[in-house]
Length: 149
Image (cartoon, rainbow, N blue to C red; front, side, top):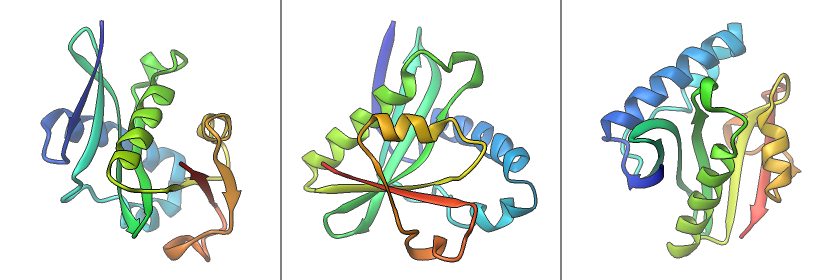
């Protein structure tokens, strides 16, 4: 049985999933991991979604305000043994819905250019590639995307 939980970054299940995500990213990002890690802290995130399968936390995502009207999607992760089941799409749609409820008109996100299966997820969900924003402007391995909600 699938359930979704709205919570904050103080949630222990979220912290556990983020530790798994950080381990995955440390390998994938290699020498660039320290740069990206500085922008992925989870302190004081008020809008976190956790996806449960049979009461086991298997995926998460979050958003935070980037600027008025624009929410930034952060910390998207699905346990590798649960990938390919549409879980990330459900999490992303729920985050977008929640952002809309809270008055946001746009969502933006950053991901790495390659190798990255998440790019297809975001394109399918209606995101389009935009110029790199903020701290990612001079990050050649970053790919930034946006969706109008």
